[in-house]
Length: 129
Image (cartoon, rainbow, N blue to C red; front, side):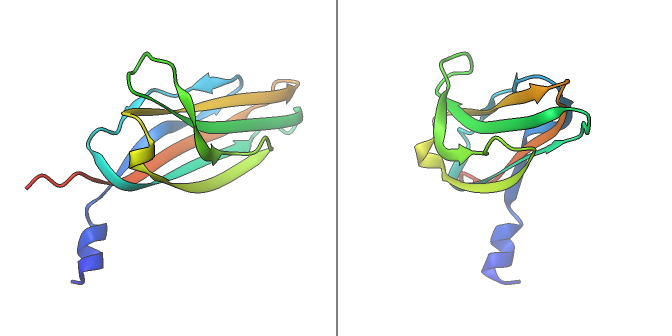
């Protein structure tokens, strides 16, 4: 087994937003990244599921904070555009994040826009040897 294969076997997947149907703006549960190092692959997905809505849009962004209940700030470059569908991946350096992250979603449009939303993080945990 190559060193790359061994390394990939240790990647951890964490759900940032369980796939769910959303009809209003939302904030996901904060995720603690204190045991993470290096680069993190963030995936954000949002798809309109309501054909009857007028101009449905969804804007998702990753935010970060040092404490769970503190004031979260946007992570530069980790934002979807306001669109009817987004399926995006971002690579973020853990050193540019604070301890906690969450997804903040804003839904727009009329006639009850509905979106299927999900988000994940893939990373390596800190090595403790």
